Image: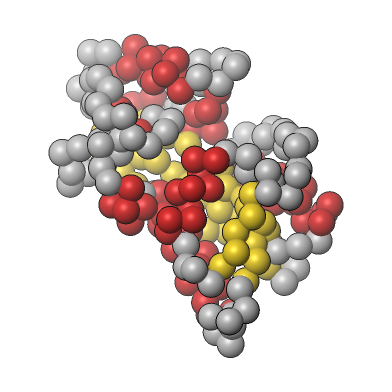
Length: 199
């Protein structure tokens, strides 16, 4: 059976592993590392949407192949959506997840309203056409880190309806309820409809 090849515009091994656990076996996913693309793609957008399309546009312009990119962020209600598009570099450069979490916990100290959401925007070039998909998971920021799994802000984010953080939940549960998984499912559903004769 022919596989549908998609190039994922990331060097982030955690993202690749997470998506490969979730995605259908009939898709062949390659990362930037897999194709030897070492040059970083500057994320200069002011929104998650802009950053996702900057990455997807860069690949499509250079390689003219089916590809997708994502940008994700933690958006905290009481902080007016911060850190948002700056989630990965919230505490400055070089990027450091522990410093980012420490900054968030400091800003949230003493606050009773702790609602937040993870949001992913996925930008897809398929057969030369542009498509975008969004995934959101609501939850809250806890007062200290819990769990050693996941990555990014996972140890301080507890999704609604659960008593464990993303860093404590099994990967298959996180993929099912998480923001990236939701956006990916929308993209895969779209591809299933477009490629019914292949998959």
